[in-house]
Length: 109
Image 1 (cartoon, rainbow, N blue to C red):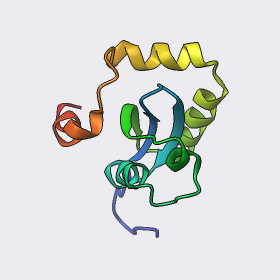
Image 2 (tube, one colour):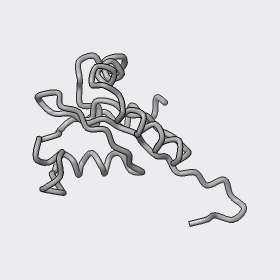
Image 3 (cartoon, rainbow, N blue to C red):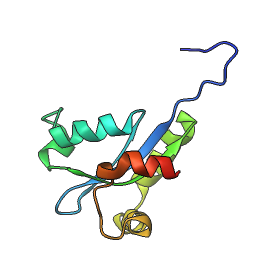
């Protein structure tokens, strides 16, 4: 929806979720916390993330431009696993579930 006379921006998130086996899934969302809850609760029972028990947010970035976020998601999806692992380990070497502290982490950005 267009906003007249305002500088309306909406954050778009590129994220990686993982599971106990460190399998990776890269996605994009406008509400990161809600999307992570959907992954954890298996909202879409037949989805890849539900079938393989993706239960932890291990990496994320935010963008004010949806096109830039979509390009970044496609870029990361095209990477080899080793490059994705390096991206995660740069900021989250212990693969902690960042969704537990998401509010706190967002305030620090």
